[in-house]
Length: 152
Image 1 (tube, rainbow, N blue to C red):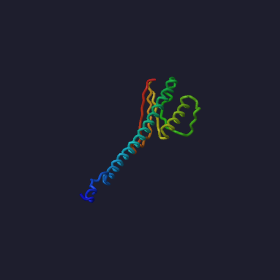
Image 2: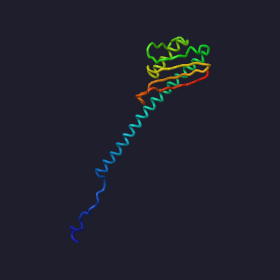
Image 3: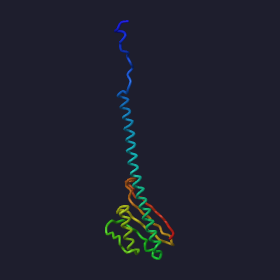
Image 4: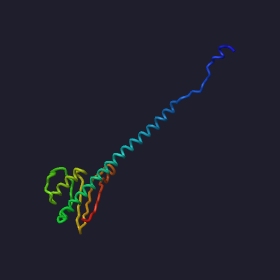
């Protein structure tokens, strides 16, 4: 055999990735990252709403405990409350009127100045309803309501 035939290169099939395969892989990765970003956004929204609901629960039980500790004047805690962040005095007298101001400040600082509370006391049963705006879920009707009822 001649030397030229013996060392002739053998044609091999091309191996590796083509440009189309790489672009498809990048596209799939992009959709996965987009889904992950959406998941993170929803997680933040759920966490903030859960935090607001926890604050409302704590505020409701706070005023119920105050009513229990002053059972003779429990009816004086009843009425409508509007959350505020101005004129707050943490050292207010612990009378029903003084506590009303303190609770309105707590309501405003925890759930925003637009939050409202309603306390009704009748026949030994107190009902506390707290409403606050949660625009993250429904911009048209953003109000979220939490209600608790307890026998004192």
